[in-house]
Image (cartoon, rainbow, N blue to C red; front, side, top):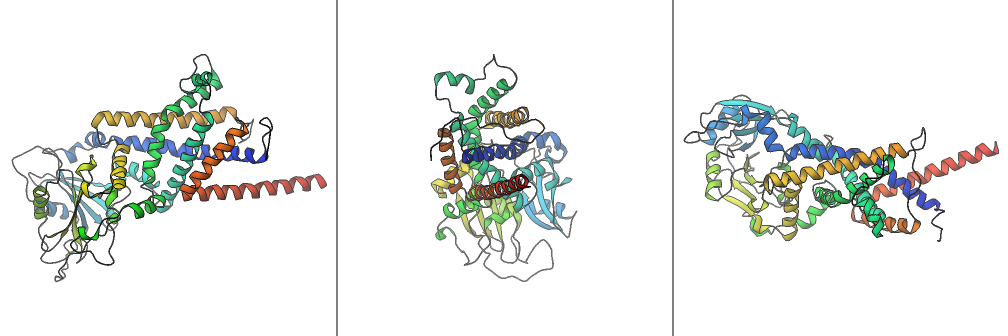
Length: 460
């Protein structure tokens, strides 16, 4: 197939139309992800600012036993199921107890020195809970997760193909791509701003999209199935069929690291007489304080959580999802005799798991303190500017009184390369490839219908 660059073929016009409308589809989601990402990025500062009465306590000489603090929290919801206990992360911080109250997750806060109940939150309704839920699955469950995976796939396509199309191929072209030209005004000035923002934000956006993909339900789940494998010898007792550790994670809160999501939860070994208590599954369960002391004896850094056993075969899961993944720790402990059934640390991760965990913490801005937060904040703001300037450019260039597509801006030789890039990405990311095929079929059906309508109008 040959065509002159000044007379683009029907095929390339269609490709440009998809590329353009995909940008309109992706841009609002990128704005949402950037804003919610900023909220979660500054979680430590925002939480302390918004909820000091729940989080900050006056340090004293010693903590009360964990079981006593747990009883204080349970007293407010005696019928609720206790799911998690989070010891104080610093001397001036409270203890948090998470309960499931008939499907509603509630966090109770207790002073570890005095045992005074400080208050509660409905976890998913807090600023951080909403931001994390939107960022992970649009508060829509699996459907939202799949939508965001499609958005990430199309975002990758637009970013890579956009860089290819707009990359400066002459020295003169650099001036309008890397740095906006000051002499230009109005539409061309916005075009330069959009191009320059895209150029400098490209690496960060590519990193955000790729690292975020590892957490998605479809592609991320398949990726984890391949790479998250640990030898059975690491477990003292692994049943043939067991729930996976990922069930401890929720969209608004991470408990176990990504590297452990696909590992099985071991079972506590002994049968015990069932009790009617809604929170303690069995008689003979070891004290929660023993798990706290075990964490200290095994060198687990502060910031860990303890997921309580659920059912007669459940285990205590002591997990640290650390800001620096080299400090990660996940221990599964028999609820009756305190035996450590599994102890997985950074050195046990595969090379891929180490790379993903490092990428996740870089994505979240947690590894290198305030400077790291600032860099991620700048990247989020650049993504916001890139998305909003792109939408404004469309508004300025749209055909009068129509929701239309501007003229094809590049030669066919460049578009052939961009389409090859699109095809490769479609093969790498199945949901992207599937939606590309769906768009092709819908667009073909629309063109056939429009052609038939035009012919009927002419003959009539």
